[in-house]
Structure formats: C-alpha cells, structure tokens
Image (cartoon, rainbow, N blue to C red; front, side, top):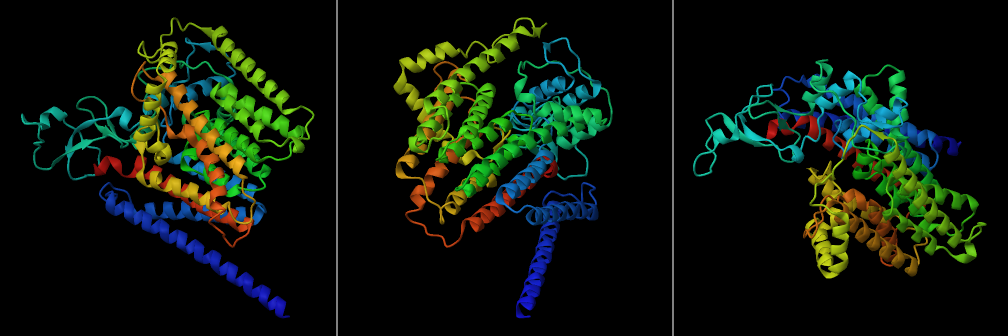
Length: 575
C-alpha cells in the first residue's frame, strides 16, 4: 500500500514537472517575441503581435513535446541523441536561407542534375525555370561577401527604403554629412545587400517574396564547375522524392538538405552505438552549431563530418573483429573519396590498437595497405570520371587565377620551412586557433559572437561529463591523440596553403574552423585524462550522458534561433 502511494506521488510529481517545463518554454517564447517586437521594431513593420506570439509558442511547444516523446519512446542515449540531432538540424535547416552555406549553389545544381538521372557533365544542359528563379532569388551570401554601403531613412516605416549612393553622403573632409532623418548603413557581417548603386536594400525575406511572386528569371541557371557524383548520393534522392511529389525548386532544395541531415544523423547514431565511454564528448561535438550548420546543408562536409565522428570511435576501440575492420574501411574510403589525401591520416587509428585484442582475420598492416590502395584507386577513378564525361565546357582556367600555383607553393614550403612555420603560427594566432570561430557561419562572413564564446565551453562541458566512473585514456593514448590532432591541424592548414593561397603569402587563405572539428573532438577526448586527476564527479554514466544531451540540445536550439534572428528578424532595420 505504501509502495503504491509512493508510486502515484512520483507520477504526479513527474507530471507536474512536465507541465511546469511546458509553461516555462511557452514563457520563453513570449519573451523572445516581445524582445523582437521592441528591439527590432516589428510592430512598426506591420507584423501582428498575436500572430508572432502564436507562431513562436506553437514552434517552441511542439519542440518541447517532441523532446518529451523522444525521452519516452527512446530508451537509450544513442537513439535519444540521434533524434535530438535530427530535430535541431531541422531548425538550423529552415533558419538558414538557401545558398548561404559555402558553395551551396554548386552543390544544389549538381544534386538536382543527378536527381534527374543525369550522371554526366554537359555545360549545355538546362534547368527548369523555377530552378533559375531560385538561383536569381538567392544569388549567394547575404553578408560580407556582398557588402553594401549607403544611407537610408532613419525611422523604420514598415517598408524597405530606397537608398542613396554613399558618395552623396560624404563631404570633402571624409566625415559623414547626411540630412536630418537619414542614417548611414554598412551591410558588412549583416544579412542585407543593395542591388545597383541606387537599388533597394534587401534581406533574405525579399528573396523568398520574389521567388514566390513567380516572376520569370532574367537569366537561366547553368551547369556548375563541379564534376563530382559520389558526394551527392545523399542529397539527390531527397530532391528526386520531392520532385515526384510535385514540389518546386524551393521544396526540392529543402528536401535535399533534410536528406543530407538524415545521413549525418545515421552516421552519428552509428558512432554513439559503438561507444562504451566518452559519449558526452561526442554528443557535444555532434550537436555543435557548426556541425549542424554543415549537416543541414548541401555541402558534402555533412557526410565527411559524420564519417570523422564515426572514425574517431576507433581511437577508443580495444577489441577489433571482422565487422569492425569492414566498418572502418567503409568509412575511411568514403571520406577519402570525398576529400582525398588529408584523410589518409586517419590510418593512425591502427597504431592505437593492442595486438593482443586484435581478433580480425586481416592484420593491422594488411588493413592499412588495403585502405591506402582503395583510397588511391577510388580517387583516381573519380578524377578520371570527372574528366571523361565532361562535355562542352571548353577550356577551364584556374579557379583562383595565376597567383595560385600548387607546385610553386609546394616548392616554396619545402625550400623555406622556417618561413612557413611562421606563416602557420601567425595564421593560428590571428584566428584565435580557430577554437574561437565555431560561431562563424557561411564562407567566413557571418560571425555570431555568443556562439563563438559558448562553443568552446560546451566542448569543455562534454570533456568534464566524460570523466565520472569511466576509465580515462591511458597517458600514452592521450598523448597520441594530442599529437595526432596537431599533425592533422598542420596538414589541413598546409593543404589549404598549397591549393588556395598565392605563392609566398604570409597567411593562409580560406581556412575555416569547420575543418578542425575532428581535431577539437580528439583533443577533448585526450583532455579527459588530465581532468580525471583533478575531478571526481558523483554521478553515473547515464546521468552524465543525459546532462550532456540536455545542454548540447539547448545550445543547438538557441543557436538556431540566433541564426534565424540574424537572417530574418533584425539586421536590415537595426544598422
């Protein structure tokens, strides 16, 4: 009788907590809507307060209910984490406007062509008219890559104002002299741009409005300079399904993003299932805003990042069997087909294995030879295919002009190793070792300071929560992980210096923090060894995993809201 009464009281308490949590989430939605109304002048822009509040409450409430459903239906951490990754990725998918992720235009056009069953590269191929309209509606990044300057009315009136040329607002001394009621704007690092010298200042919402207006595109979409097939076997099926269901180009675009996100989620789920320890570290990295930003896009880094996280589990693998060898070879070949050469460094995983625990038929050196031979052969086949089935492109010049010479840059590095070391150190220093750039989205042009600040702390949280009641890496393995991270970082930056940077330049061009996500993961894994000597947390593994999942999911949701706020709510009206 006493046990039954206690059980009923626990159920009532749990139900009360769920109701309180739902009310708290709805209160946050109302506060966010009020903040947007006040700070971004939404009332003056003609947006009905009740509609805004209702939409936010509905989205936040639905997300809360979905998370509760996940916790009830999914009984283990990998399943719960996979659903959270997919749901948070969906938020990022729709918070990020089309064509904002690096090279997304090229990736989408190639994926669309493959979805039509075309596996050759013909420059004379044409796309449907709505694809051309989508390309014109979203011509590229809305931020620093397309900076506009000018003057506009100071008080918002609910409409996008006509701008005046910047030169008309500048006097002979170079100081700003604009008339009363006017203010100067600069679109750098903000989602706004101006078409033409006297054109209208626009944001991403105007791109959607123009696409939905059905106005014909002025120029047809053309085939991209992209001669790859394999990386798009994730996005192309999503587009094909959307086309069969009758969706236009915009619907197909989001279907491809979701398909890419689904593949990333499955790879993360597979990685978490393999882990017997350090799950909080992997959860923190998998739900990192930068990871989700790439996963919920057309960039093939979505697949590569999933393969990285899967491959990193083998650093912790003690006993290998035939299935483990097959899984490692599949992931290794996939990442090397998509991004060759630098990913050969993942063979170092085999150096971390104990010969006494090796149960597979193939010896480690045999696996290494098989992987290297397969990666080289596959990359050669991909290169041959891209050249053999290319038609009507004519002569294709160097993408970055004559200033970038790969062989010349390689000779420069080999003949000036100390100078290049200075370039490497200087580039890392200028970019805060890229650990402070995990909130820089797009092609190095959209920094969100709060995410930059909190991302390293969330990574540290994962390392801390991986300490309790788990046997940490031994000192040798921990040191090996640290060294591997340094070698991978140096190799990735050097590859970008050789392939994308003018010969002899004093800094590396084009390198981004997303390339170092696997490095930050293995360093966080190594950090648990040091933390185990100074931390003793009184909690079990399941509670630590749950805490990491809660914190990382919450951070991902906040990041998605900030991304949406940047593109659709504030910047056009607050500069």
